Image 1: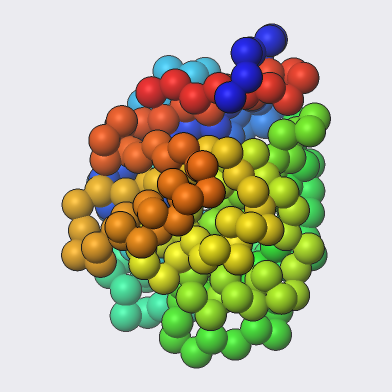
Image 2: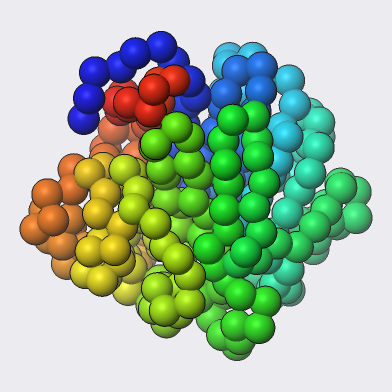
Length: 257
C-alpha cells in the first residue's frame, strides 16, 4: 500500500450481502457498474449513486446470469439512465428473476461481450479476459463468467465475477492475464476459486471478497490460506461493509471502509 496523491478514480465494492456489485467512478468522466447484487440491492446502489453524484451509468456489465449478480438491475434501471448494458449472452431461464432481467436486454442499449473486447471509460482501460465466444461450459454458468481487467496509469484491477474451477483454468491457458495490484475474488472466495496458479500469474497485493451469509462455505479457509501464503491482504464486505478503493492520478492507491 502506498501514500495517495490526487484522486483519480474510486472503485466501490458495495456490501450487498451475498452477491456482487462494484462501481467504478471517475468523476465527470466514467461511471461503470459491474454486477448489480441480488434482488433488493437497487435501493442501496441508487443511494450510492446519488451520494457520489453519479447522474448516468456509462456502462453496466453483468458478469453471468445468477440472481446475486443481476438481481438489483431492474430497480436501478428505473431511476438511472444507462448508456450501454452488456453481459456474456448466457441464458438461465431457471433462475429467479431472469425473465425480468432479460427484458432489460430489449429496453436498454445492449451488447454481448467476451474475451478480446476492450473499451475506454473515461481514462480507465477495460479489457475482457474471459470467456472466449467458443468456450462451452454447458450449464456451468460460473465457468463462463466475464472476467475484466481495469487499468489506469500503472494500476490494474482484476474483476473475476464468479469465474472459478474449469473456467479459471481456461482463462489462464487462453488469455494474456496481466499482473494486477488488486483482485476481486471470484465466486465470493469459494473453494473452487483463486487457484495458486492464478495468484502466481496476477501477483496482487490486495484481495477484495464480496460476500455475505451463504451456503457455499465462502470464503473458504483454503482460499484465505492461499492469500496469506502469498502475502495478499484480504478485505471482506461481510466484515468491513462497503469497501472503497481510491486510486490516485499517479496510480497509487489505498483502501478505506
